[in-house]
Amino acid sequence: MSLSKHHTLQMHVDTVHLKLRKFPCHLCEYRYGTKQYLRIHIQTVHERKPNYNKYKERMAAKKKETE
Image (cartoon, rainbow, N blue to C red):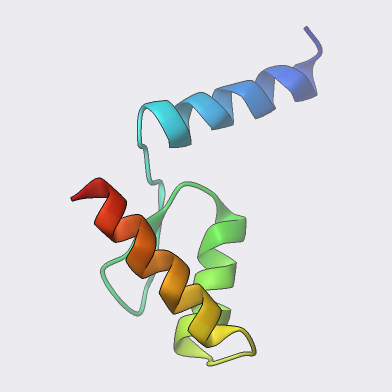
């Protein structure tokens, strides 16, 4: 397995199966498994960029799934 595929697989296992959230938001209590998701969170929630409502709906649905 190539190094990039191994890294991608490890990141998948860490975030999806082990539920590791290594990237905390400095503006609220949320934590994310990848820098990309943290960046999207900050842009859509704290900076109120476009697609804010869609993002909030997805997060609410995700939260319901885990309850």
